[in-house]
Length: 254
Image (cartoon, rainbow, N blue to C red; front, side, top):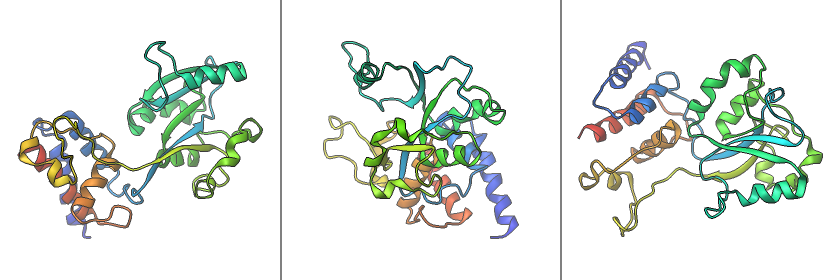
């Protein structure tokens, strides 16, 4: 790819990010792509991993209390009691309270405000954080996490072999997987009883104004690239990625 092509694509992204007719969640996704144009490599599968923050002392944590930041609806919830049964059972069994917050809505948006504290090894307000594996890998690489005590996690031996030694954390000393997941399409079965089986169907004219996308670039752009016949789990060009951005922009404006 030539420098001219790269500059042209960057100009396109800047123009799209500044377009006030584009919804904020789409502009947010496009803005992220300005600095992470090739970050989607390896996006075919993703998983959420729990990591132990390396700077977790001095801000309310103790041996009797663990502060955990997680995604929404990742843990069982009893509407009648307003409690998380798993956490209640954990506290009963171990005597450790859990200060639990559904604080993660987006990997980048959760991490960005914490960077100064992470880099200076200050308390971030959490002892455990649940992030997608690619962001977990970044935290580990940059020294933002601490090693688990295997003696405190006896069920670690139950991990499937395929999950025991990821390249970013051999031996799973600083992270543990919650679940392996794939991005996909969800729909209201009462409104669309036949379901949606493709991106083309999702963005059909009859669904105009009724579609939302995730701000996580890997999820949204990964699906769009697949729709365009581009495998996001392998190397792809900046021009191919721009085709995905332009496709999404067209759906918003049409």
